Image 1 (tube, rainbow, N blue to C red):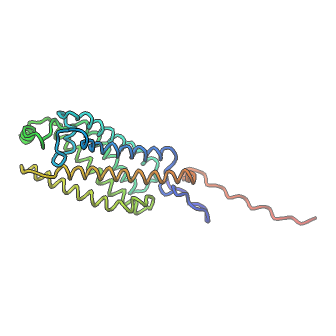
Image 2: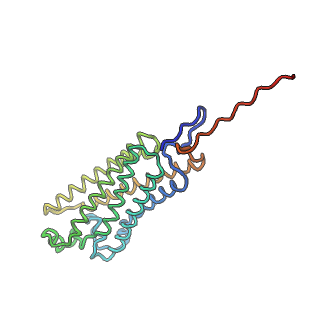
Image 3: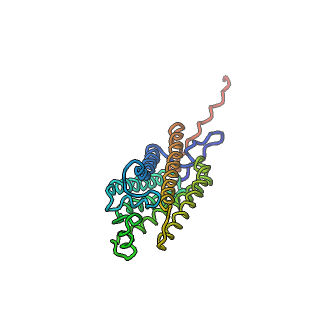
Length: 270
């Protein structure tokens, strides 16, 4: 649904480029921001005794079934995934249907759905801190949820990476999120670097060798995704405020405003 161009000499509403409207647009950015905050719940390990080494352990090990605070972190992951999913779907319904934007929000919805699913498929134990768990995992004696968790985690990160790239391209191509257009590229590059770091550490661990910074790489990876989603929410909030100040843009479903009829010319005396 494309917004109708304003008449010559009339300024276009600032929100016309994104097509955001009213309460739904406001709900989208609020939900995404809350989802980003919930996705950083793992920072609670800085003040809570989890028994895991944040330098070496997977983030998902905090939510393992045998961990004392596993239920808390599974709940926050579920909330984060559902909030991002709802926010992405709401944004899809309230933004202009441009290819890069639609693809980006679809990828973000995939990230949210996979994150929520991930929380329902927890590890049974923490392999980086428990040698018995690591041996059982190597021997294939752990529950099938370990494999399912790996698949859902991979889908979540693929969705996140795709969303970061696609929405950054959308911001630079369409110009509706200036802050994201400016800060998106360095965030995407940092996210790619953190992902390469994490994958390299996983390969070292899988080969049976010790890894010293798997947890750092993965935590950086997760933190950058949360920062990006928070930045996106801020950009959407700015557009929603401008829409509120300037009025809702006219859309293709609305009848075009009729220009006022010119006044009748003055008539002379009979």
